[in-house]
Image (cartoon, rainbow, N blue to C red):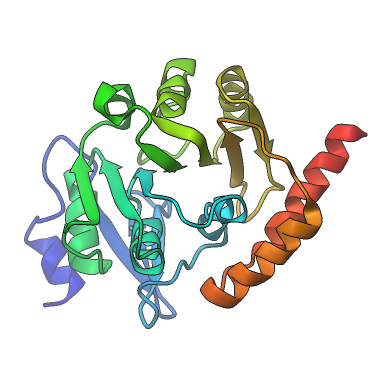
Length: 259
Protein backbone atom coordinates (compact mmCIF):
# COMPACT_ATOMS: atom_id res chain seq x y z
CA UNK A 1 0.00 0.00 0.00
CA UNK A 2 1.36 3.42 -0.88
CA UNK A 3 1.49 6.40 1.48
CA UNK A 4 -1.33 7.95 -0.53
CA UNK A 5 -3.50 4.92 0.19
CA UNK A 6 -2.82 5.31 3.91
CA UNK A 7 -3.75 8.97 3.77
CA UNK A 8 -6.85 8.36 1.69
CA UNK A 9 -8.28 5.90 4.22
CA UNK A 10 -8.23 8.62 6.90
CA UNK A 11 -5.94 6.72 9.24
CA UNK A 12 -3.94 9.86 10.02
CA UNK A 13 -6.85 12.29 10.17
CA UNK A 14 -8.54 11.57 13.48
CA UNK A 15 -10.80 14.56 14.28
CA UNK A 16 -9.79 17.01 16.97
CA UNK A 17 -6.12 17.04 15.95
CA UNK A 18 -4.21 18.38 12.93
CA UNK A 19 -3.93 15.75 10.18
CA UNK A 20 -0.52 14.14 9.67
CA UNK A 21 0.56 14.04 6.02
CA UNK A 22 3.72 13.31 4.03
CA UNK A 23 5.55 14.58 0.99
CA UNK A 24 8.63 13.05 -0.62
CA UNK A 25 11.50 14.72 -2.45
CA UNK A 26 14.81 13.23 -3.63
CA UNK A 27 14.62 10.17 -1.43
CA UNK A 28 13.51 12.01 1.73
CA UNK A 29 10.05 11.67 3.26
CA UNK A 30 8.78 14.75 5.13
CA UNK A 31 6.14 14.96 7.83
CA UNK A 32 3.58 17.79 7.85
CA UNK A 33 0.66 18.62 10.11
CA UNK A 34 -1.70 19.66 7.36
CA UNK A 35 0.45 22.66 6.36
CA UNK A 36 3.66 23.23 4.39
CA UNK A 37 5.79 23.41 7.56
CA UNK A 38 8.19 20.46 7.83
CA UNK A 39 7.75 18.72 11.19
CA UNK A 40 10.31 15.98 10.54
CA UNK A 41 12.09 13.99 7.86
CA UNK A 42 13.46 10.53 7.09
CA UNK A 43 15.82 9.46 4.31
CA UNK A 44 14.16 6.39 2.84
CA UNK A 45 17.36 4.38 2.44
CA UNK A 46 18.57 5.34 5.97
CA UNK A 47 15.39 5.20 8.07
CA UNK A 48 17.20 5.09 11.43
CA UNK A 49 19.55 8.03 10.76
CA UNK A 50 18.77 11.63 11.70
CA UNK A 51 18.30 13.60 8.49
CA UNK A 52 17.84 17.22 9.64
CA UNK A 53 20.80 19.18 11.03
CA UNK A 54 18.98 20.77 13.96
CA UNK A 55 17.55 17.39 15.00
CA UNK A 56 21.10 15.99 14.98
CA UNK A 57 22.09 18.90 17.22
CA UNK A 58 19.40 17.86 19.72
CA UNK A 59 21.77 14.97 20.52
CA UNK A 60 24.49 17.32 21.79
CA UNK A 61 23.84 16.14 25.34
CA UNK A 62 26.02 13.15 24.33
CA UNK A 63 28.99 15.46 24.94
CA UNK A 64 28.10 15.44 28.64
CA UNK A 65 26.43 12.06 29.21
CA UNK A 66 27.15 8.87 27.32
CA UNK A 67 25.00 6.26 29.06
CA UNK A 68 21.65 7.68 30.19
CA UNK A 69 19.19 5.28 31.82
CA UNK A 70 16.11 7.07 30.49
CA UNK A 71 15.74 9.49 27.56
CA UNK A 72 12.41 11.23 26.91
CA UNK A 73 11.27 13.06 23.78
CA UNK A 74 8.53 15.63 24.30
CA UNK A 75 7.03 15.84 20.80
CA UNK A 76 7.48 12.81 18.56
CA UNK A 77 7.90 14.62 15.23
CA UNK A 78 8.90 12.06 12.60
CA UNK A 79 10.34 9.86 15.41
CA UNK A 80 13.94 10.55 14.31
CA UNK A 81 15.27 11.11 17.86
CA UNK A 82 13.17 8.31 19.32
CA UNK A 83 14.42 5.77 16.77
CA UNK A 84 18.02 6.96 16.98
CA UNK A 85 18.16 6.71 20.77
CA UNK A 86 16.37 3.35 20.73
CA UNK A 87 18.73 1.80 18.17
CA UNK A 88 22.03 3.46 19.18
CA UNK A 89 21.71 3.37 22.98
CA UNK A 90 20.87 -0.28 23.71
CA UNK A 91 21.10 0.16 27.48
CA UNK A 92 18.71 3.12 27.55
CA UNK A 93 14.96 3.25 28.07
CA UNK A 94 13.30 5.60 25.56
CA UNK A 95 9.95 7.34 26.01
CA UNK A 96 8.19 9.64 23.55
CA UNK A 97 5.28 11.86 24.58
CA UNK A 98 2.99 12.99 21.77
CA UNK A 99 -0.48 14.57 22.01
CA UNK A 100 -1.56 14.02 18.39
CA UNK A 101 -2.64 10.43 17.65
CA UNK A 102 -2.26 11.12 13.92
CA UNK A 103 1.47 11.73 14.41
CA UNK A 104 1.89 8.48 16.34
CA UNK A 105 -0.02 6.55 13.66
CA UNK A 106 1.95 7.99 10.74
CA UNK A 107 5.28 7.35 12.50
CA UNK A 108 4.35 3.72 13.03
CA UNK A 109 3.19 3.28 9.43
CA UNK A 110 5.49 5.49 7.35
CA UNK A 111 8.50 6.52 9.48
CA UNK A 112 9.73 3.12 10.74
CA UNK A 113 8.90 3.70 14.41
CA UNK A 114 9.17 0.30 16.12
CA UNK A 115 6.35 -1.04 18.30
CA UNK A 116 6.53 -0.46 22.05
CA UNK A 117 8.57 -2.98 24.01
CA UNK A 118 10.45 -3.21 27.31
CA UNK A 119 12.71 -0.28 26.30
CA UNK A 120 10.42 1.83 24.11
CA UNK A 121 7.19 3.56 25.15
CA UNK A 122 5.15 6.07 23.15
CA UNK A 123 2.58 7.87 25.31
CA UNK A 124 -0.33 9.76 23.79
CA UNK A 125 -0.62 12.66 26.21
CA UNK A 126 0.07 16.35 26.77
CA UNK A 127 3.73 17.08 27.52
CA UNK A 128 2.75 19.45 30.34
CA UNK A 129 0.77 16.67 32.02
CA UNK A 130 3.79 14.37 31.70
CA UNK A 131 6.24 16.77 33.37
CA UNK A 132 3.78 17.61 36.16
CA UNK A 133 3.11 13.92 36.87
CA UNK A 134 4.82 13.28 40.20
CA UNK A 135 5.65 9.68 39.26
CA UNK A 136 8.01 11.05 36.58
CA UNK A 137 9.93 13.39 38.89
CA UNK A 138 13.61 12.46 39.16
CA UNK A 139 13.18 9.67 36.60
CA UNK A 140 14.56 11.25 33.39
CA UNK A 141 18.25 11.68 32.53
CA UNK A 142 17.73 13.47 29.20
CA UNK A 143 14.83 15.48 27.80
CA UNK A 144 14.70 16.29 24.07
CA UNK A 145 11.96 18.86 23.56
CA UNK A 146 10.54 19.80 20.15
CA UNK A 147 6.95 20.92 20.66
CA UNK A 148 5.27 22.62 17.71
CA UNK A 149 1.76 22.81 16.37
CA UNK A 150 0.77 23.11 12.70
CA UNK A 151 1.50 26.88 12.65
CA UNK A 152 5.08 26.53 13.98
CA UNK A 153 5.18 30.07 15.39
CA UNK A 154 7.04 29.00 18.54
CA UNK A 155 7.12 26.21 21.12
CA UNK A 156 3.62 25.24 22.26
CA UNK A 157 4.79 25.14 25.88
CA UNK A 158 7.03 28.00 26.99
CA UNK A 159 6.09 28.83 30.59
CA UNK A 160 8.13 28.73 33.77
CA UNK A 161 5.66 26.08 35.02
CA UNK A 162 6.50 23.82 32.08
CA UNK A 163 10.26 24.22 32.40
CA UNK A 164 10.04 23.75 36.17
CA UNK A 165 8.25 20.47 35.45
CA UNK A 166 11.05 19.42 33.09
CA UNK A 167 13.61 20.34 35.76
CA UNK A 168 11.73 18.31 38.39
CA UNK A 169 11.60 15.22 36.15
CA UNK A 170 15.37 15.26 35.55
CA UNK A 171 17.81 13.26 37.64
CA UNK A 172 20.45 15.20 39.61
CA UNK A 173 22.82 15.49 36.62
CA UNK A 174 20.03 15.61 34.05
CA UNK A 175 20.13 17.68 30.88
CA UNK A 176 17.58 19.02 28.41
CA UNK A 177 17.93 20.00 24.76
CA UNK A 178 15.18 22.03 23.15
CA UNK A 179 14.52 23.41 19.69
CA UNK A 180 13.42 27.06 19.80
CA UNK A 181 12.08 28.01 16.40
CA UNK A 182 9.65 30.62 15.16
CA UNK A 183 9.06 34.30 15.75
CA UNK A 184 11.98 36.00 17.46
CA UNK A 185 9.94 37.14 20.47
CA UNK A 186 9.55 33.48 21.37
CA UNK A 187 13.30 33.05 21.81
CA UNK A 188 13.37 35.50 24.71
CA UNK A 189 10.23 34.08 26.31
CA UNK A 190 11.69 30.59 26.35
CA UNK A 191 15.22 31.55 27.33
CA UNK A 192 14.03 33.70 30.24
CA UNK A 193 11.76 30.91 31.50
CA UNK A 194 14.58 28.34 31.27
CA UNK A 195 17.11 30.62 32.95
CA UNK A 196 14.69 31.08 35.85
CA UNK A 197 14.67 27.32 36.46
CA UNK A 198 17.92 25.71 35.27
CA UNK A 199 21.43 26.10 36.68
CA UNK A 200 22.96 26.74 33.24
CA UNK A 201 21.37 27.48 29.86
CA UNK A 202 23.42 27.59 26.64
CA UNK A 203 22.19 28.19 23.10
CA UNK A 204 24.09 27.27 19.97
CA UNK A 205 24.36 29.35 16.80
CA UNK A 206 21.30 29.28 14.55
CA UNK A 207 21.09 26.44 12.05
CA UNK A 208 18.82 25.67 9.09
CA UNK A 209 15.90 28.06 8.82
CA UNK A 210 16.10 29.81 12.19
CA UNK A 211 16.17 26.71 14.39
CA UNK A 212 18.13 27.39 17.57
CA UNK A 213 19.01 24.47 19.84
CA UNK A 214 19.34 25.21 23.55
CA UNK A 215 20.90 22.93 26.15
CA UNK A 216 19.87 23.36 29.78
CA UNK A 217 21.61 21.73 32.73
CA UNK A 218 20.05 20.88 36.08
CA UNK A 219 23.55 21.22 37.53
CA UNK A 220 26.07 23.47 35.78
CA UNK A 221 28.82 21.33 34.17
CA UNK A 222 32.55 21.82 34.25
CA UNK A 223 33.44 22.54 30.63
CA UNK A 224 36.86 21.41 29.41
CA UNK A 225 37.03 21.94 25.67
CA UNK A 226 39.87 19.47 25.13
CA UNK A 227 37.70 16.76 26.72
CA UNK A 228 34.66 17.84 24.72
CA UNK A 229 36.55 17.73 21.41
CA UNK A 230 37.78 14.24 22.33
CA UNK A 231 34.21 13.15 23.05
CA UNK A 232 33.05 14.77 19.81
CA UNK A 233 35.49 12.61 17.87
CA UNK A 234 34.15 9.48 19.55
CA UNK A 235 30.55 10.51 18.79
CA UNK A 236 31.44 11.10 15.15
CA UNK A 237 33.09 7.68 14.90
CA UNK A 238 30.40 5.69 16.71
CA UNK A 239 27.23 7.55 15.66
CA UNK A 240 28.24 9.60 12.61
CA UNK A 241 26.96 12.83 14.16
CA UNK A 242 28.75 16.18 13.49
CA UNK A 243 29.64 16.68 17.15
CA UNK A 244 32.79 18.75 16.57
CA UNK A 245 30.56 21.55 15.25
CA UNK A 246 28.54 21.39 18.48
CA UNK A 247 31.68 21.94 20.55
CA UNK A 248 32.69 24.85 18.32
CA UNK A 249 29.19 26.29 18.83
CA UNK A 250 29.54 26.00 22.62
CA UNK A 251 32.94 27.66 22.41
CA UNK A 252 31.53 30.50 20.30
CA UNK A 253 28.69 31.01 22.80
CA UNK A 254 31.09 31.17 25.75
CA UNK A 255 33.31 33.64 23.89
CA UNK A 256 30.29 35.85 23.15
CA UNK A 257 29.20 35.74 26.80
CA UNK A 258 32.66 36.79 27.95
CA UNK A 259 32.91 39.66 25.45
